[in-house]
Image 1 (cartoon, rainbow, N blue to C red):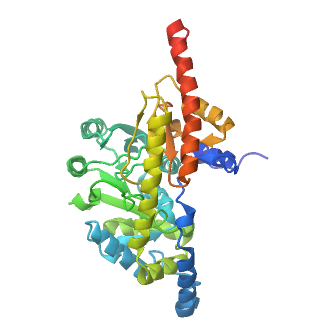
Image 2: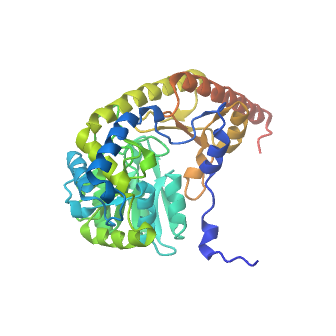
Image 3: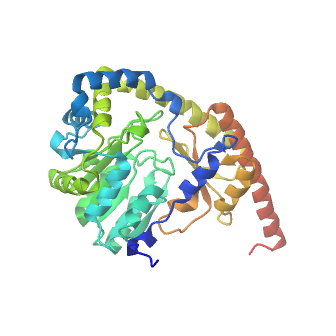
Amino acid sequence: MKSKFADRTHLVQPTETREILKVTARPEVISFAGGLPAPELFPVEAIKDVCNAVLIEEGAASLQYSTTEGYIPLREAIGQRMKRIGVNSPVENIIITSGSQQAIDLTGRLFLNEGDIIICESPTYLAAINAFKSYNPQFVEVDMDDEGMVMEELEKKLQQHPNAKFIYTIPDFHNPTGRTLKLERRKKMVELANQYDVLIVEDNPYGAIRFAGEALPPVKHFDTEGRVIYLSTFSKIFAPGLRLGWICADATFIEQYIAFKQTADLHTDSFAQRITAKYLELYDIEEHINKIKAVYRERCTAMLASIEEFFPKNLAYSKPEGGLFIWVELPESVDAGELFAECLENNVAFVPGGAFYANGTKKNALRLNYSNMPIDKINEGIKRIGEVLHRELEKENTLILTGNLA
């Protein structure tokens, strides 16, 4: 039969991470690949009580169709969370989505025509790259350093691409690098967006999971013209299986998001929304988040100590103050994809860094997740990766010395 697929299907392929996770699901593999929250921290018993309360109080409504923009008590609770981080937003400016991934995809549907320019960090979140790819844009990457996107480079890109549609940024505990955009750069990003009349899409799934350093207001806090679209999620602070995210944006944008979401799934799961709203009513989510932060702090500290002990000394790596990831940069001649295959033979896994570059420009980095493994497995897994790295770098050095490096 002749293919009936739309032309856009060639733009989106299964992600490298998806294929890696299939392999690393084997129980003998110590996996630092997925960005998975620690499942032992999910508030299962509390959710049992909450489910009963929802069914008793709003059983029929919780199982019925609902409004596209979302359950008002949950949106009000999100508004209170936004206020605490420095963003005053009425409930009308908040829409509930089926995870922040839907928020990213709806953003592409709403704003991108074929060939439009997206300015993003280099590297950036691979699931956002793939969501946006289905709309066939052009990606313009901006270099990062340990303090996030470099503003001088951002301004150069804006000058070169005056019709850029939006800047996509992950300012807090960036995925994949774990870096955080410093305060002055947040202010400068908004200044540049105003000057060059470009939108900012602030993707902030990790901001609440800060376990070190000083809390910073989101980029949207500095928004003076309603051009920052803020995306976030309950997946990292509550339960990812409920698939609840949100968009906070100017009312004009929200109206269009609602229209596009109606065509996608009509509304986000009514029961999941009520479960989350009831949990926020009956329990102290900040206490729950503090438990998450304490565990992730220990695991991040353990991973950093193991990297220091077992990895070659000439490698650069991030030292996150929160979130889920550490980014390791290798010599330019080393392909992390090839290292992954050897590490997997030793029953340890990570995500090769090449997938996080929107234009496929680099392969000499890897992402490590510390949230989903206990400390003993973190130590053992990093030791195994370190052994592979030492062998690979010794081989590279031998080739350089003998003049055989291609």
